[in-house]
Image 1 (cartoon, helix red, strand yellow):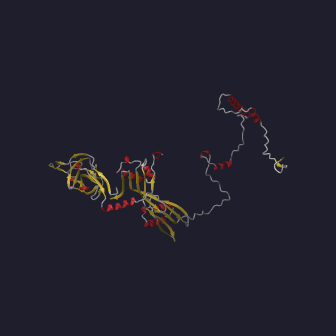
Image 2 (spheres, one colour):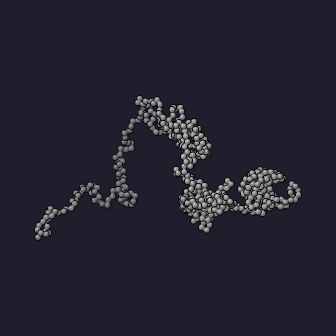
Image 3 (spheres, one colour):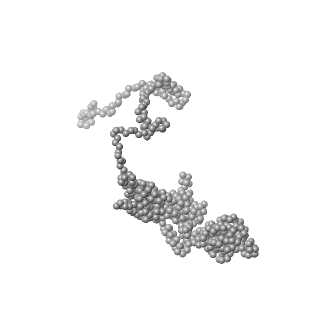
Length: 502
């Protein structure tokens, strides 16, 4: 316990405590299995039967398995004497009927799901069930239906529905209310069950920039218009074309119809096959952003494509009821050549001939195209109808004025489809082939006049370019300046081939 210390104090004696460390734990008694494993360390009573097939260890494992199976069969009661567990007695009588009413099964198997049990003596019937003081409903305006009808279908009384419809019609145009508009309706308490609930409040979005509320005040209904501030700044998207112009623009947030219009307009200037992956597109679409958070995208306003050495810019412009595309200088599409006005056989050319009816020789100022009666006649190019009606030997006759001092005339028509003063476009149907006037059979007499002189229609190849002038050009330039000053709201990320495949 104590040790002698000879250090210090002239070798005076001392004592110190001795450290023993951790005492070893007593050994556990060996079990039979431990003794067998110590005796036979390489012995495995249950080897893996999936490995070393055919070895001594494998056969020993098979023998062990067979022995265990044999012992199990010997200890079992046998198949002819099974061990029966406790079985609940089958339900009968009232218990069976109660269980059937609570079961969830097919009716063919005896279930009576939905059966209600008889009320006990503790249940007291109510003389009258109380109604909710307020009902909140939603009405949907259907296509082609009156506003009052939508309210009546939601439960609003006929009188209140008619009064609300009159109030709404006095404030806004009912046609502004689009099909599918949701109307929030609040109905109040009624005096009896035989009466319709009175309308307490109604609210809906009449237009993108206007909300309407109808409320009951002092026993009457009054309408409140709630203007909604709307920002009309267009949306401008710019980016690299990548593997697909359509996918890239759509991924950047451009609406599908605007992208389709962009492709169609650009295709008039640049073939789609010549648009490269590194080309940059620039598009501007109409956008309305309400103060309440909603956003609406509309038509394409500007289409641009930068190919490095060449830049294409087109601006949308409404002219005479038609949508046209012009470059920033006001130059429109270039029309090459004149359209053959009717499909048929050339029966007589321009020049001197013996008249088939009069019988003497004179100048034939046009060419005849033989075709069945009713064959459509189309305008050779854009222009304005100067005359449409009966004209002596020409029969039903149409004369159209074009740019560059040119005029075209169409005779012997069976039907006229245009009126004087209207503007027609290249290829537009203006009538049908016939045999009116001085004619020997159904055909179209087609003339071309240049500066007041009849010329051979086959000798003139008309090429025209639509151009804005005067005050219209000034208004157009103002629009171009405004659009080009629109900030870029988003930069499109070009799609790759892998993105396209996904």
